[in-house]
Image 1 (tube, helix red, strand yellow):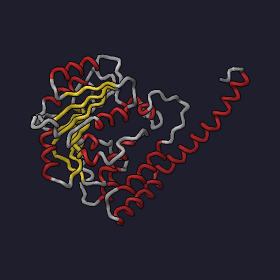
Image 2 (image 1 turned 90 degrees about the horizontal axis):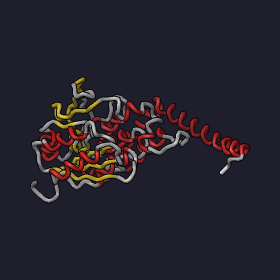
Image 3 (image 1 turned 120 degrees about the vertical axis):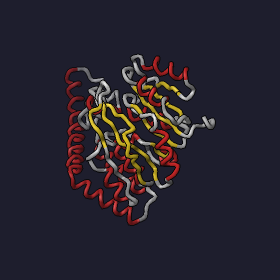
Image 4 (image 1 turned 90 degrees about the vertical axis):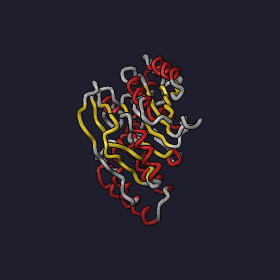
Length: 311
């Protein structure tokens, strides 16, 4: 390594990833670019994940392994890998995904050469549980010089937030709230990053994203169900309003963005359209479900008293 503090940090958040985590780690250690650290945050795994990761950390000093005492939730664990990182540039890696060997080298070259680029990503090869290629994603969004255009593209529903697995300037990441605990907060983070600069896509498939039945979007296919990924100890009766959380967060990131008044007004105008789309209906549903939950709780308390089980 060229210095005590690496230029690049890769954050790998994992929970019970024994089937794939070794393959993910190997893909990082096999990079042609060597000035990096791999920050692993283990979310209190109960399988062989800890043993696998500790073995790699003992073998290569660039691997830094941390383990949570308990499951702190998926987003908190991903955020923790960034907060523990030290590099000038940062990139997440799912424990079931992998890099092509030149990915870091080519991504660093772009960020070094283009100060206006805050995030560099690549085309994505989709693979199945067995590593077979099943598709290619080629979505070059947020490349515009105009902040409003970038913001509008990333708040849409026509993508799966793959760009978040790009190489990002750490100083810009530190200006964000990272991923708060609500469903789809990764989309809001991407939109916020785009207000600090443009994205750049390397026109090569250098990242492999695994699609399988144990992935979080398969385990929790519905928006409110997916809140359990953020709060693993959440009861089914917990009141959540994820669409409201996202809407208010969007307004916050627009208000704090380093953009012109006209660009800011354009982003606010876009949020009106965002509301008039299906998002407004989803927010109304949030309110209805929250109201029903609040009204249901006193009824449960009365029932417990009637049964003599009130505590």
